[in-house]
Image (cartoon, rainbow, N blue to C red; front, side):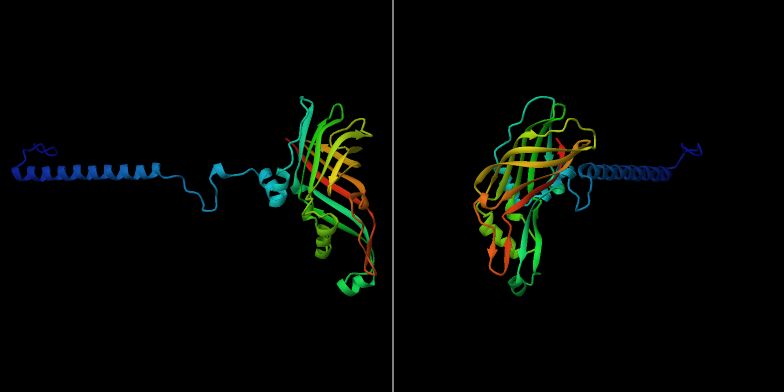
Length: 277
């Protein structure tokens, strides 16, 4: 019977209907095969990323990236050779680590230039302050804020990257004064607080002094540092400085006839930002 008209279909009509059904079945099979292929392609392929985007497992946090980029490779290698710091135990102790991306170590020394400095190097005659600085430093601060006591506190500076405004001066200091190729690190380890603050409030700057051992150019001496610092949230921002003599470190201050003289005593200063771990 014809499924539309209800009339009996002839042989030719039956052959046409059979051919039509066969073609429809073939199309359905072909469509099914194409669907399977497309689905397999979608599920088997990773989500596309821009060429310059790293996979999630390779992404590095911003603070870690900033700290890595702030240190030179040579400084990072030198710091890695330091002995581990022994920390005090207890919930009251907080640990802060210096961020080299936001910190600077420098020396400041008085220099006087004479006529030959102008003739030879084009420098202006007169007295001036020479500043050499670097961001190649690391430091760890452990403190009990309730008792206002310090635990493990160490600051290290990589000396070969200290720079002033004169490359010739920097080269002479590296080779003849600090001899920083032989003694690349200056390390200060604080032992105790002097004139400790009686109290502190969030964001308030406090002043105190720290005494400890400074290792520099193969020598070790007790030094006292004046410190100004404030705690805001989980970060400490501060500055610390001390006075040293070149002769106490084993070398004489530069003195070149009719060219320049340098004062024996000079200042070492660290401006730092440290974040709680």
